[in-house]
Length: 123
Image (cartoon, rainbow, N blue to C red):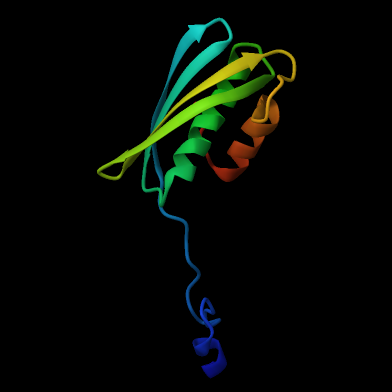
C-alpha cells in the first residue's frame, strides 16, 4: 500500500471505482439546409467535457441519415459551447447513399448501433 501511495495515479484496490458523470440528454434539433446537408443542435448536462455532446450530435446525425434513407454521413463542422453546465453542439453533416469522401465519414448503421450500446440517444 505504501508503494501504491507513493506512485501518482495509483488507486488502492479497496477504493470505490470512479463512475461516469450522470448525463442528462436534453434533446436534438435538426434543420435541413439542403437535400443532403443537415444542421444538428444537441444539448446535454452533466458532461465532464465537450466530447460527450459531440458524440451525442454524431449519434443524432447518424440516425437522421437512416431516417432520410441514407446510409452514410460526413461531418463538416461542429461548434461546441458550455453555459452554466449545459453543453451545446451545433454540427453540420452531409448525408449520402454512398460512402462519402473525406476524413470524418460516418457509417450510419454502425454508429447508431454503437450509440445504443453506449446508452447515447439517437433521436
